[in-house]
Amino acid sequence: MTYERIVVAVDDTEAGKRAFSAALPIAKSARSQLLLVSVIEDLAQMAGETIGQVEDSHAQAMKHFEWTHRPMLEHAQREGVEATSHILLGRMVERILEFARERSADLIVLGGFGRPRLMGLGTSRGYDLADRVSCAVLIAK
Image (tube, rainbow, N blue to C red; front, side, top):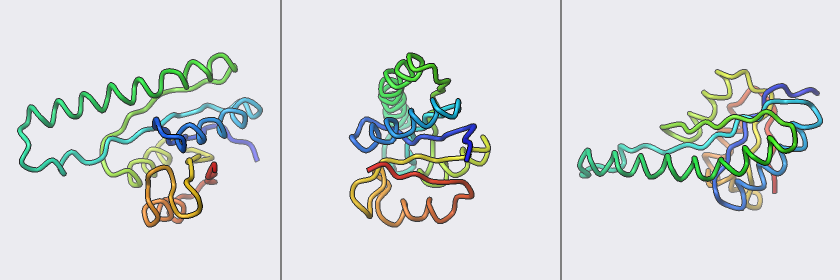
């Protein structure tokens, strides 16, 4: 199967790095586009925080993920792979699914921690993503 667009759920954990490492050679051989995705989870969980505190937390998370994506983008470029960075807001599973659908992704790559946990998604949320997606899913262990 040929993959034109590969969504890679990344962060600064070992699982996120494994996802990128698994996706890169696939993208290189298939001449695919890598779409690096990180999700800043619901800021609504910060109930009781001031608007300024929420904005500060959001800005810090954005900077963190930009910092996380940068070396991956540079590595992909050195390998001749087109890669773009996407930092999304919302619920992780829903946003990854929505993004993959919007971009007509052919493959979603996640890092795995053993069998039940997928890149910090946890058992139920990780399996929820795999059960609800219409494209291939690769879990990099």
